[in-house]
Length: 271
Image: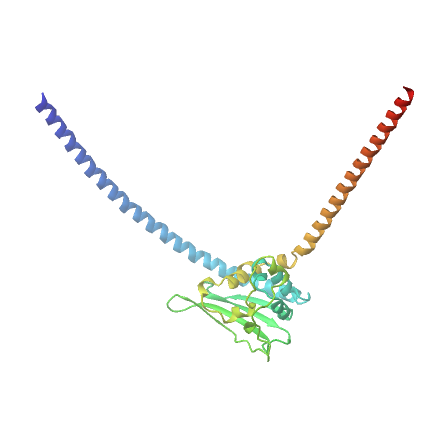
């Protein structure tokens, strides 16, 4: 009986081995097919990227006349760009009071994406005559070199004597910046000479992708301090109202006590 049982057991083990080999073969074939399908998906993704790039190039050209018209209209609004930057939460955190003063002379901002878009872009800042530097325009350009690595270059700021904001430590943060940080900021203008991490230039990306498409939304942001001030006034009025209610209740309580005392005296006299 035991011999028969042993034969059956060996047969079952043999079947399991064959099943495992079949399963491994099927899995390997599935992996190879998945790899083939994935290659097709990657090919389509590359094709889609090329098509999207063509569409971006087309509409980038179509947008240019509207950007030009917008710049002409913005020129009619004093301090448009400095107000826009101060109202932007990320940019305002980089501005000291002297930076803000210098940016009051900023008359125009332009963002130009290069022909194939992927290769980079340039941001131009145009300034009126000012007491800080000689430049009429400051630019920072972002490119991809032959090796495919991101690189940047920028204008050299020609500071007037004693006016180099990048060499001044201890700038006082502007009012918006005080709410977002405790450390005093470096000058906004150090950005023009900072090429340490071109591939992750946050300020450049913010200006290109967030501010430039619609600067009006940040120009129109209400002054948060004014709103907070209004809120404080409302709170004060509510507190005053509660105090008046409390005082009224106390006076009513005192009147009730006085009435109770008088009634008690009358009852005593009747007795």
